[in-house]
Image 1 (cartoon, rainbow, N blue to C red):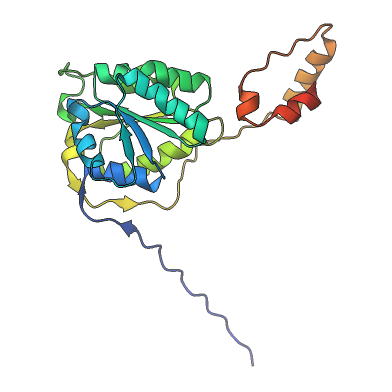
Image 2 (image 1 turned 30 degrees about the vertical axis):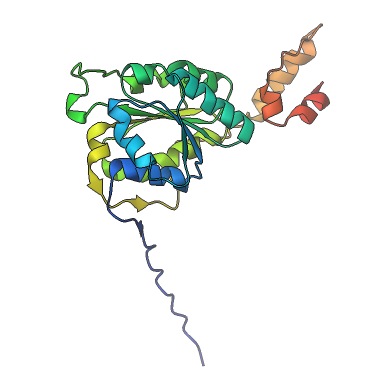
Length: 245
Protein backbone atom coordinates (compact mmCIF):
# COMPACT_ATOMS: atom_id res chain seq x y z
CA UNK A 1 0.00 0.00 0.00
CA UNK A 2 1.26 3.40 -0.90
CA UNK A 3 1.24 5.84 1.90
CA UNK A 4 0.70 9.49 1.25
CA UNK A 5 2.54 11.89 3.48
CA UNK A 6 0.68 14.97 4.48
CA UNK A 7 2.63 18.06 5.44
CA UNK A 8 1.40 19.80 8.49
CA UNK A 9 1.17 23.50 8.17
CA UNK A 10 3.40 25.12 10.75
CA UNK A 11 1.53 27.41 13.04
CA UNK A 12 2.63 31.02 13.00
CA UNK A 13 4.83 31.91 15.93
CA UNK A 14 2.87 33.42 18.77
CA UNK A 15 3.87 36.93 19.58
CA UNK A 16 5.08 37.55 23.09
CA UNK A 17 2.73 40.17 24.41
CA UNK A 18 3.41 42.07 27.57
CA UNK A 19 0.95 43.81 29.83
CA UNK A 20 -0.08 47.40 28.97
CA UNK A 21 2.59 49.83 30.12
CA UNK A 22 3.71 53.40 29.62
CA UNK A 23 6.41 53.96 27.04
CA UNK A 24 9.00 54.70 29.72
CA UNK A 25 8.17 51.43 31.46
CA UNK A 26 8.44 49.51 28.19
CA UNK A 27 11.93 50.91 27.69
CA UNK A 28 13.02 49.84 31.18
CA UNK A 29 11.55 46.36 30.66
CA UNK A 30 13.38 46.13 27.32
CA UNK A 31 16.65 47.05 29.05
CA UNK A 32 16.04 44.34 31.62
CA UNK A 33 15.47 41.79 28.85
CA UNK A 34 18.92 42.73 27.46
CA UNK A 35 20.50 41.93 30.82
CA UNK A 36 21.24 45.51 31.86
CA UNK A 37 22.11 45.71 35.55
CA UNK A 38 23.77 49.14 35.75
CA UNK A 39 22.81 52.47 34.19
CA UNK A 40 24.56 55.83 34.53
CA UNK A 41 21.97 58.59 34.32
CA UNK A 42 21.71 62.29 35.09
CA UNK A 43 18.06 63.42 35.30
CA UNK A 44 16.25 66.24 33.54
CA UNK A 45 12.80 67.30 32.42
CA UNK A 46 12.67 65.24 29.23
CA UNK A 47 13.97 62.08 30.92
CA UNK A 48 12.14 62.28 34.26
CA UNK A 49 9.52 59.73 33.17
CA UNK A 50 12.33 57.25 32.52
CA UNK A 51 13.83 57.86 35.95
CA UNK A 52 10.44 57.26 37.56
CA UNK A 53 10.15 53.95 35.70
CA UNK A 54 13.67 52.96 36.76
CA UNK A 55 12.72 53.29 40.43
CA UNK A 56 10.44 50.26 39.96
CA UNK A 57 13.19 48.06 38.52
CA UNK A 58 14.63 45.43 40.86
CA UNK A 59 17.33 44.52 38.34
CA UNK A 60 18.82 47.83 37.19
CA UNK A 61 20.95 49.92 39.51
CA UNK A 62 20.87 53.60 38.54
CA UNK A 63 24.08 55.49 39.31
CA UNK A 64 23.91 59.30 39.42
CA UNK A 65 27.04 60.96 38.00
CA UNK A 66 27.91 64.58 38.80
CA UNK A 67 27.81 65.45 35.10
CA UNK A 68 26.44 63.79 31.95
CA UNK A 69 29.90 63.52 30.44
CA UNK A 70 31.06 61.62 33.53
CA UNK A 71 28.11 59.27 33.07
CA UNK A 72 29.08 58.56 29.46
CA UNK A 73 32.69 57.80 30.40
CA UNK A 74 31.57 55.71 33.37
CA UNK A 75 29.36 53.64 31.06
CA UNK A 76 32.32 53.21 28.71
CA UNK A 77 34.52 52.11 31.60
CA UNK A 78 31.85 49.66 32.74
CA UNK A 79 31.75 48.19 29.22
CA UNK A 80 35.53 47.84 29.06
CA UNK A 81 35.71 46.15 32.46
CA UNK A 82 32.68 43.85 32.16
CA UNK A 83 32.52 43.05 28.45
CA UNK A 84 28.85 44.04 28.48
CA UNK A 85 27.19 46.98 26.76
CA UNK A 86 27.50 50.15 28.83
CA UNK A 87 24.36 52.28 29.18
CA UNK A 88 24.12 56.00 29.95
CA UNK A 89 21.19 58.39 29.91
CA UNK A 90 20.61 62.14 29.84
CA UNK A 91 17.84 64.62 29.20
CA UNK A 92 17.31 66.66 26.04
CA UNK A 93 19.28 69.71 24.91
CA UNK A 94 22.41 70.47 26.98
CA UNK A 95 22.07 67.19 28.89
CA UNK A 96 22.29 65.21 25.67
CA UNK A 97 25.09 67.30 24.16
CA UNK A 98 27.20 66.69 27.27
CA UNK A 99 27.27 62.99 26.29
CA UNK A 100 28.93 63.62 22.92
CA UNK A 101 32.58 63.42 24.06
CA UNK A 102 31.99 60.10 25.83
CA UNK A 103 30.14 58.77 22.79
CA UNK A 104 32.98 59.85 20.48
CA UNK A 105 35.48 58.15 22.79
CA UNK A 106 33.47 54.91 22.58
CA UNK A 107 33.39 55.24 18.79
CA UNK A 108 37.16 55.70 18.50
CA UNK A 109 38.01 52.94 20.99
CA UNK A 110 35.38 50.43 19.80
CA UNK A 111 33.49 50.33 23.10
CA UNK A 112 29.90 48.95 23.11
CA UNK A 113 27.68 51.72 24.42
CA UNK A 114 23.97 52.60 24.28
CA UNK A 115 23.21 56.26 24.97
CA UNK A 116 19.59 57.03 25.88
CA UNK A 117 18.38 60.61 25.64
CA UNK A 118 15.08 62.20 26.46
CA UNK A 119 13.69 64.45 23.74
CA UNK A 120 11.05 67.15 23.66
CA UNK A 121 7.54 66.05 22.60
CA UNK A 122 7.20 65.18 18.92
CA UNK A 123 4.99 68.17 18.21
CA UNK A 124 7.83 70.48 19.32
CA UNK A 125 10.72 68.83 17.44
CA UNK A 126 12.28 71.19 14.93
CA UNK A 127 10.53 74.27 16.33
CA UNK A 128 13.27 75.54 18.63
CA UNK A 129 11.56 74.32 21.78
CA UNK A 130 13.12 74.76 25.21
CA UNK A 131 16.18 72.51 25.55
CA UNK A 132 15.74 70.98 22.10
CA UNK A 133 18.75 69.92 20.06
CA UNK A 134 19.05 67.67 17.02
CA UNK A 135 20.97 65.04 18.98
CA UNK A 136 20.19 62.43 16.33
CA UNK A 137 21.86 64.56 13.68
CA UNK A 138 24.83 65.85 15.63
CA UNK A 139 26.03 62.36 16.66
CA UNK A 140 25.74 60.64 13.26
CA UNK A 141 29.48 60.79 12.61
CA UNK A 142 30.45 59.14 15.92
CA UNK A 143 27.94 56.29 16.29
CA UNK A 144 27.32 52.95 14.64
CA UNK A 145 23.62 53.75 14.41
CA UNK A 146 21.03 56.21 15.71
CA UNK A 147 17.34 55.85 16.53
CA UNK A 148 14.65 58.48 17.02
CA UNK A 149 11.61 56.67 18.41
CA UNK A 150 8.47 57.90 16.65
CA UNK A 151 6.02 55.17 17.67
CA UNK A 152 5.59 53.54 21.08
CA UNK A 153 5.29 50.14 19.38
CA UNK A 154 8.88 50.50 18.10
CA UNK A 155 10.48 50.51 21.56
CA UNK A 156 11.05 46.73 22.05
CA UNK A 157 12.50 46.32 18.54
CA UNK A 158 14.67 49.43 18.74
CA UNK A 159 16.23 48.46 22.07
CA UNK A 160 16.94 44.89 20.94
CA UNK A 161 18.51 46.11 17.69
CA UNK A 162 20.54 48.80 19.47
CA UNK A 163 22.20 46.31 21.82
CA UNK A 164 22.84 43.87 18.97
CA UNK A 165 24.51 46.56 16.86
CA UNK A 166 26.51 47.94 19.81
CA UNK A 167 28.27 44.67 20.70
CA UNK A 168 28.55 42.78 17.38
CA UNK A 169 31.25 43.19 14.76
CA UNK A 170 33.43 46.14 15.70
CA UNK A 171 31.73 47.32 18.91
CA UNK A 172 30.63 50.92 19.21
CA UNK A 173 28.00 53.38 20.45
CA UNK A 174 24.33 53.53 19.49
CA UNK A 175 22.00 56.45 20.29
CA UNK A 176 18.30 56.15 21.17
CA UNK A 177 16.48 59.51 21.23
CA UNK A 178 13.14 59.20 23.03
CA UNK A 179 10.45 61.97 22.81
CA UNK A 180 8.67 62.71 26.07
CA UNK A 181 5.14 62.28 24.72
CA UNK A 182 5.92 58.68 23.71
CA UNK A 183 7.33 58.03 27.17
CA UNK A 184 3.91 58.98 28.58
CA UNK A 185 1.76 56.97 26.15
CA UNK A 186 0.40 53.53 27.04
CA UNK A 187 0.62 50.41 24.87
CA UNK A 188 0.90 46.63 25.07
CA UNK A 189 4.49 45.76 24.06
CA UNK A 190 5.31 42.99 21.60
CA UNK A 191 8.66 41.44 22.52
CA UNK A 192 10.60 40.29 19.44
CA UNK A 193 12.51 37.00 19.47
CA UNK A 194 14.65 37.64 16.41
CA UNK A 195 16.47 40.53 14.80
CA UNK A 196 16.21 41.23 11.07
CA UNK A 197 18.77 43.76 9.82
CA UNK A 198 19.35 42.97 6.11
CA UNK A 199 21.76 45.87 5.54
CA UNK A 200 23.91 45.22 8.60
CA UNK A 201 27.11 43.26 8.00
CA UNK A 202 28.91 43.13 11.36
CA UNK A 203 31.99 41.19 10.20
CA UNK A 204 33.13 42.29 6.72
CA UNK A 205 36.14 40.48 5.29
CA UNK A 206 38.66 41.57 2.67
CA UNK A 207 38.74 39.48 -0.51
CA UNK A 208 41.86 37.75 -1.84
CA UNK A 209 42.63 40.51 -4.32
CA UNK A 210 42.70 43.18 -1.64
CA UNK A 211 44.80 41.01 0.65
CA UNK A 212 47.33 40.29 -2.12
CA UNK A 213 47.66 44.02 -2.78
CA UNK A 214 48.35 44.66 0.90
CA UNK A 215 50.90 41.83 1.04
CA UNK A 216 52.63 43.21 -2.07
CA UNK A 217 52.93 46.66 -0.52
CA UNK A 218 54.36 45.22 2.68
CA UNK A 219 56.90 43.11 0.76
CA UNK A 220 58.17 46.22 -1.04
CA UNK A 221 58.84 48.16 2.16
CA UNK A 222 62.45 48.51 3.28
CA UNK A 223 61.96 49.46 6.94
CA UNK A 224 58.38 48.54 7.91
CA UNK A 225 56.92 49.85 11.15
CA UNK A 226 53.88 48.38 12.87
CA UNK A 227 51.64 50.93 14.60
CA UNK A 228 49.36 48.82 16.78
CA UNK A 229 46.48 50.05 18.94
CA UNK A 230 44.61 48.73 21.94
CA UNK A 231 42.16 46.94 19.66
CA UNK A 232 44.66 44.08 19.49
CA UNK A 233 44.15 43.54 23.22
CA UNK A 234 40.38 43.98 23.28
CA UNK A 235 40.08 41.76 20.22
CA UNK A 236 42.27 39.03 21.79
CA UNK A 237 44.51 39.17 18.72
CA UNK A 238 47.93 39.28 20.39
CA UNK A 239 48.82 35.79 19.16
CA UNK A 240 47.92 36.68 15.58
CA UNK A 241 49.93 39.91 15.80
CA UNK A 242 53.05 38.05 16.93
CA UNK A 243 52.62 35.54 14.10
CA UNK A 244 52.28 38.41 11.61
CA UNK A 245 55.43 40.08 12.93
